[in-house]
Length: 272
Image (tube, rainbow, N blue to C red; front, side):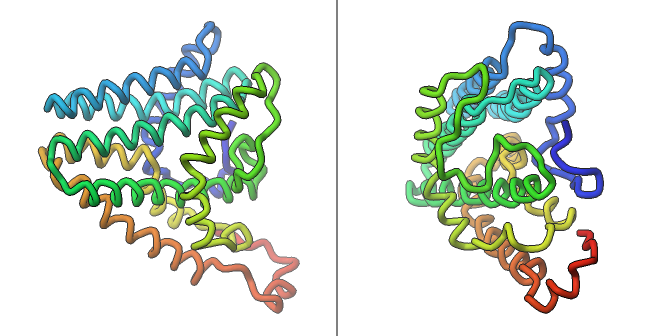
């Protein structure tokens, strides 16, 4: 099921693994393999990548980082083809992502002897980048009745869907709020009216998709292969400045119409 109508689909630079993910999901459709199993697969792939980074096997590390991204997309695809969405899978995916991201950064800090504060600030910036992309993307999807298991504001524990247990949803949602709450609140504070603004155009969403985890890990992998590991942490720290650039563009060009403009546009369909 597509998340966006045709005219609002944008080139998602972080979603390069989707075609392979769909093949994987379709091949597993009629098997006993569940989306949770695929999520566990990407967790294992992430740990192997970390081991390869520490051991200096950078080509292998890059391969497993890309594999992790592909499997990260495949679990959601499998949930769709089996028509079994779950909050358990949604929050397990997110919790696993942030823990692996932290370990990726720690492994680079370990092999490069980068200042620990640069590592910490780069990780915070890395997460803020991903949070902004997810924030804008979920807002866009919700405007068109998209996937409702992802919400713009994660404030309340959801009711478990059929086939999952509420206690696991409660635990994983609690971990999600613990790990992501500060990042969500920061991005919301910086752009609290984003959901009231104009529909974000495709070119803008493509630009922001460089903040998507898939693209971030691709940059990670490329810099490792090029033996530029020492600039990975400084790069993500500096690239965090683009958070403020994108928010500034959103507020200036795609802000909520003024009252007189709203009245004028009540019978108009504004395309992005």
